[in-house]
Length: 126
Image 1 (cartoon, helix red, strand yellow):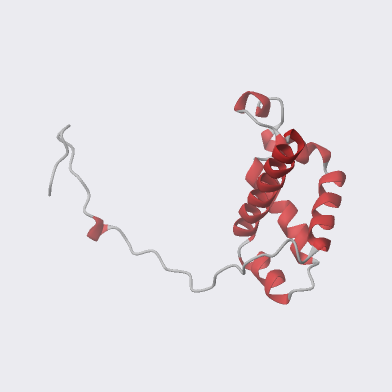
Image 2 (cartoon, rainbow, N blue to C red):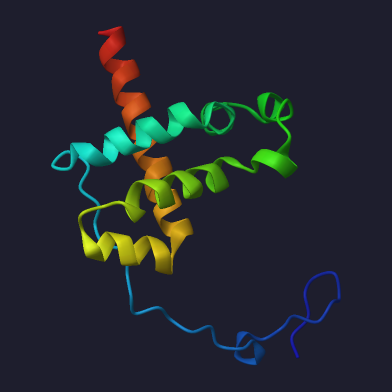
């Protein structure tokens, strides 16, 4: 078996178990043509102000103010928001998708929020 420069044995990738590949992908989420999604997201953020603070906190130092055991991380907050937004969606594929892979939808919500905050901040500066 090959060794590293420190003399430890390097594991061969062939020894590692194969991970199953997912054939089901999350649907492409359109936000502009579905304003009700944004409204449900804003409603959820209003109803969960402490989690919204975690989601929008910028630095790890700011994150230390929050009780992670109670509120979780930015991704866990976005995941809970995604479940609230998409469980009530008119699109059945989106409803099934969030049930199958809530973290993926949490990442979609996080990306959407980041994009909205960034674009509104840039527009506000011009």
